[in-house]
Length: 366
Image (cartoon, rainbow, N blue to C red; front, top):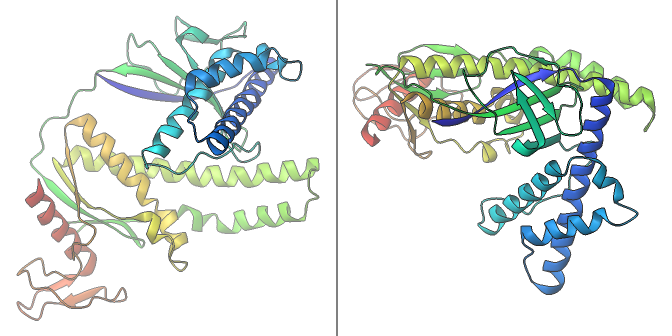
């Protein structure tokens, strides 16, 4: 049994949209006030504030005239915001993340999380707290039979689309064992090169829509700040971005699902994308390839379906090493795409050779 989230688009009524917008604003306000209070106490007294203390503070805030409106929305999303802040501080003190930052109205993700006490799930219809009608959800795929959501997250993206994510427990059946193994070399021209010699081209979705995006951004730059026309122009820019992101995500899902279905062991390089994007010449191409999402999808799909994903050390010289005889070259500039081994005379495609070396190293580690 695994917890799995199913995300759907829905279309709220005007009343539901207003209620959700108020809830989003209250969630953001509570998070920011709790963060401000915890920061103040830690700075002045060197003491950490617990979740219980912030929860008590929330109750006190609701009783003040200035913040009495917090009592008009469901209390569960507000409590969940405090829990998320607590998790952020736990990760910070464990040195797994940076210090929590405030949520900006125009930049942060508008979302609210509801637990079982704050929604009703009946006959496949979802009704949130403070609402008298179920959400109009577009069921693009069915939920597992008999699934009961434990958590519901409602969000609105920058393009104005509404989404609901249902977290359920599901029994995922592992795939039958596969005889093949594959090494994967991530790239820019070819999104991935496989040890079999196959190259999967990078669709470069951002580059394909670059002209449309640039035009929308120029229109946005000319609009007066805080005007209605600027809001409309910002929405058009956001729609271009979401189209790019949706197409890229769909493509990555198809590639990773195929790799997991066909191979028992998948070997990849342990790339540090955060450092690689500091290269100004390649940052845009690396971001468009979305290597981090590719790796993340391979990880959870391999765990779901009984496959083995092996990450080879990032310093492993996969490109310099001859996959035929093991001879290693001293240098291998990026502009060298094909080379011949001086020891055995084997001619290599740079990326295919790297993928074969990654597979050999991954099989050795696994």
